[in-house]
Amino acid sequence: MIYPRVALIGLGLIASSMAHAMRAAGMTSEIVGYAKSPETRAVAKDLFCDRVTETAAEAVKGADLVVLAVPVGAMGAIAEEIAPHLKRGAVVTDVGSVKQAVVDAVAPNLPKGVHFIPGHPLAGTEYSGPRSGFATLFHNRWWLLTPLPDTDAKALAGLKDFLVSLGANVDEMDVERHDLVLAVVSHTPHLIAYTMVGVADHMRRVSAQEVIKYSASGFRDFTRIAASDPTMWRDVFLTNKDAVLDILGRFHEELFVLQRAIRMGDGEHLHAYFTRTREIRRGIIEAGQDTAAPDFGRAAKPVGKA
Amino acid sequence: MIYPRVALIGLGLIASSMAHAMRAAGMTSEIVGYAKSPETRAVAKDLFCDRVTETAAEAVKGADLVVLAVPVGAMGAIAEEIAPHLKRGAVVTDVGSVKQAVVDAVAPNLPKGVHFIPGHPLAGTEYSGPRSGFATLFHNRWWLLTPLPDTDAKALAGLKDFLVSLGANVDEMDVERHDLVLAVVSHTPHLIAYTMVGVADHMRRVSAQEVIKYSASGFRDFTRIAASDPTMWRDVFLTNKDAVLDILGRFHEELFVLQRAIRMGDGEHLHAYFTRTREIRRGIIEAGQDTAAPDFGRAAKPVGKA
Image (cartoon, rainbow over all chains, first blue to last red; front, top):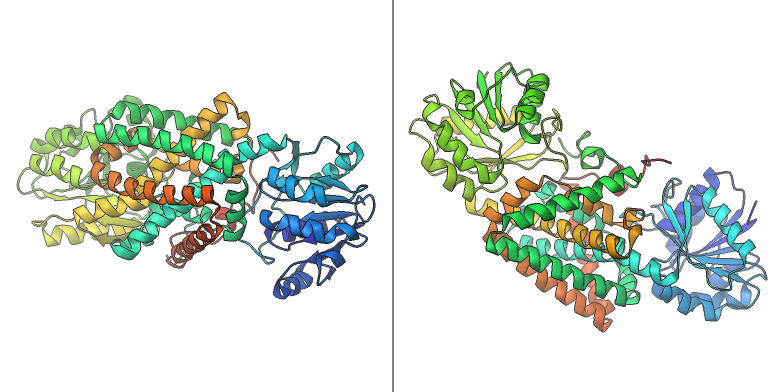
């Protein structure tokens, strides 16, 4: 057993999935949980925590691993609160989608003798909260660690082993690079999905009530992404501002060029662009990062009221 | 049997799915097919056509139903070619994603005594070509018909019955309204997905090779949409130009407001926006237009090399 006692601070999708995965893998640690909301704590106690506490400070006492699984904007205050109560030699990690902001908020607060190793599981669904977790969430998904210059090699190796036993593939990455890459593959796509859904929602209210009825023609994929947790995503955009604004700038440029091609009737440009983007999908399927089934496999088993 | 002989002009995803659905429903029509490419014709003959012909004119001879399933930009020329060979009383429909442009290109070419009823199945996957069809593609999906002022009521009722027996839900819609609603729920989302994938592809080449590896964090959903048939989509944007440019204008406005909120650190605005968009997803699931399973059900059965 790598960590006889694990403290989960924040009990949403990621923390609950970690708990379920630990149990599924037969890792017999004691799982202690804390969340701000008493209701969330009660659900967690019921579903996956051995014990819940009324403060984060209480939860981390004696813990060998502490997982910060709160929105990025809440990390600093939590780190400050738990710092005096951490066990010497404990490993502290987080699961935030942005890394530089978490390092800045958490690292200065932690005492010497505690190993802080920032992390980010590239896994999730559009659901949130303590009931949304499941044991296989991390299977074949990447879990990025962004160790700091003074990270202890043994502590790092132990955390890696732990994450692998949850089913994840672990990779190391530089903090700054992480925030840029994630702005491309996750943050900006989410913002764009939120925007497109916002536009459609507005159209629906004023003139095109059919938006929901006819959503299967492409739009519904955007709505899944745009159903993600608002607090988590607010914090992502506020804390990875520079990288997101950079990628958004590129996005506007590209979109304006395509928009101009539409206006000018430049079919050649459009066709060449749409052909190139097809390639990248193939790469993702070959890399095992998505299903090759048509329509994510939805089409084979129709949903709803049919 | 509503149509003893059906001619499919164009033998891609939609036409092949129609053929499979007809057979699955025990509709014993003769299915005659035509496609420009000899290779496509050979595959179609093998998989789902009773007969293929070397010209569209030949295919429509004696057909009771003619389905134009070619890219929107090719509809006019096909209509011109087949017009002299259509059987009196035949029903001609199409499956184009844009309706005004198809009406303009096809209707003036068709002779009197033939019933032209424009249509559009809101169904598809990211795959194309004669091997991509399957019998359940239209199950619980909407098939929009946009009848013209002089459309014969009996011909319309017959086509509806036929489409229902393919598994579709049939709705009637005004031509202009169709093109606006589809610009919102389908055309603009596709353009945006193509653009985001283009940006990521460019980043991948110049600096962030990890784009494919880490695509599971949101981006891969966009790549599915952006893997759709380039010719079909080029024609959609060229022929539904006004509505797409209108919706794109709204999209830019919304995105700039969100971008400004990020730059200014206006978390309240972001949170409120992300909360509103969540609602629309619920509406889609309640309307039976998407699965409620997390991550479209992908997460439950991990894919790839795990």
